[in-house]
Image 1 (cartoon, helix red, strand yellow):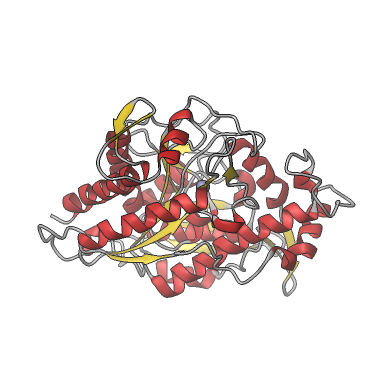
Image 2 (image 1 turned 90 degrees about the vertical axis):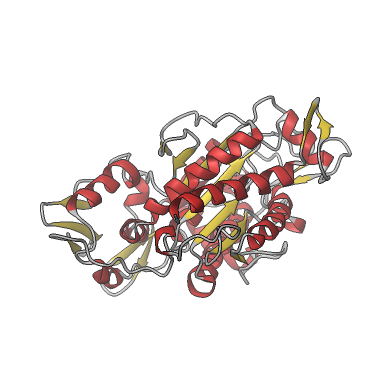
Length: 424
Ligand SMILES: [Zn+2]
């Protein structure tokens, strides 16, 4: 991820609702969203207490408030709006005494067999999701910059490299490791050309009555209003992440997904990027839905399903443990979001924020999303250019491990800390 505010703006342009005619009522869905299957939530009846439900809504998922008809919490149940036009609702009954068994396909640490001393991750299925695509897609994804004639920095290739190193470490500790992506090829069979019509429709709905087809050049200030740019984003972000979710949810069935990214701040012209002093670390878990997001029928449904699966109870302490281990090893300070409009600080370490990202929302298991290192910081850039090496080396004035090994080692340490404590 990078340049939060800019990406945020681009998303707001297209996340505004798309109305699809289904039966009599119009579903109000997000971009490439699926129709909510509210009947699936019947299996969660009487599995959560009033207090747990209210606490998760207030402190984690709906920290920015919501329209009063969306969720109405009473003593013994919650009434959730399915669709405003048809005025249909889902009623969730709270547990009266001991909450019932929570239906889910993943295993919380506490349910795994007791710890084996040298294999603290045994019995655990971990899926690694290297962020973005890299390779020939890096420029399209805007995850590419180059300083002079040095090697271009492409986030999708860096995350894949870290994931492969991490897989070796986690397997040694007993985990079953699965890759959501293990090449620079997309998981989605779609390509930008498949989304031209949809891109045009979205732009028109968002107040660009006759969108331009092509981008003039990479620095074109109006590029986000072109069919070309929007259809590329529909491909590499929405379609790709939704296909990854299908893989995670129907084939991989992990107990945990680690989304691995490198951070960045606005670098301007990718061929003449700005390097900055700031370097930092943070991790994300799902939550902190915006009011506009909660208006979408599919996002509201996905939030409630996630809440009821109690993924947060697992992913928050995990993210805290990984954050702490990464901070210790990388010595990076915690990232402070410039505004609290999109995120909410959670957990006890200061490194973890809740945010409603597509991957953290729709992978149906605990998800820890790592955002260490600013790629266009002086230090991050020097370390990426230094590449991988054994042992310690002086880079940018300090003796340190290769950035890739430091990333993989510290995530591993955090996982071991968490599972050792939780599986006692
Ligand atoms: Zn990223």
